[in-house]
Length: 102
Ligand SMILES: C[C@H](O)[C@H](O)[C@H]1CNC2=NC(N)=NC(=O)C2=N1
Image (tube, rainbow, N blue to C red):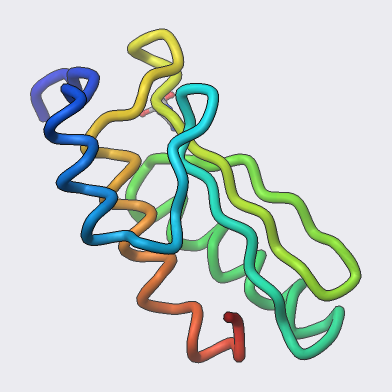
């Protein structure tokens, strides 16, 4: 796989148009989900971990009582947002509803 490059401002805007619930803050893509309880939230964390391993790309995940916070950027380019991050964000969005996350 070619080395990822940081997204331009235009590419980032386009990517965020596809991910309207995600934010770009402090050079990371971030999103906080609310879940129906703690165990559903923990189950979603496990599912996200499986996506990390499948994609070989890993976000920082924060488990709360009924929340899951996700923050991701690409370490290998010095902590900037790349296509690897938007790809992971889209995959997390796809599994979220199945966990009752909103
Ligand atoms: C060897 C392995 O592919 C790399 O260390 C991967 C693993 N997961 C990663 N995750 C993130 N977020 N950034 C990376 O640069 C990264 N690199």
